[in-house]
Image 1 (tube, rainbow, N blue to C red):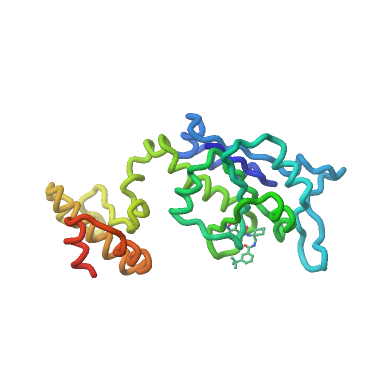
Image 2: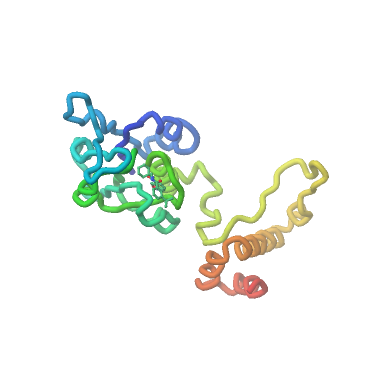
Length: 242
Ligand code: 4FN
């Protein structure tokens, strides 16, 4: 899986690609993150990448020329998708992450200022994606969210993250509470069941905790979980939480 990031701030990607699980996946060659400095493709003698908006108004708009030439600088594989990170896009979900993981290459275009000239989107962008409803100063953090979440779906990246398979969104529930040593701290103890050694009891307790917290905090996720099919053992516990 290759992520090509078109950005005015390639340095912002250093911490993502050089540390933690994603850094390891990059150094192992499991994923590639290539940043492209949009400014390097400006044909303007002052390397300008933006201009004032037609019709007037505040701020600047990113010009088509540097973006288009940065995009076309390298040949792209057949199974590639150009994504513009934008608050107008559909919001990223676990299902979308799974879908994106099927591409060989994702080109992630990061906007700045007021955004990009609409003609770049109309001509060259396959999908607009948003990470949520809040204001950002640029698309870079959104691109990093996409890279992080999609990378985890790539086969061997998971192996450095033992928990990933059984994690919440994999089956649609939030996580049960976690505890580690010591058994007691600041007057609070670990729930007895977790130290009982009864594996079936522990699994049941964790499942019930997941159901309860999901029902309380994310009723729409709980509803979706209830509506999908389950085995007998799951149903037996689940029916007590309806
Ligand atoms: N943001 C809103 C409404 C109007 C503008 C913005 C905003 C960065 C280039 C886009 C933001 C949020 C999630 C990219 C926000 C995202 C961005 C994202 C983003 C500079 C123009 C801008 C109603 C959502 C609050 C700035 C709402 N996911 N404009 O943030 O790129 O991907």
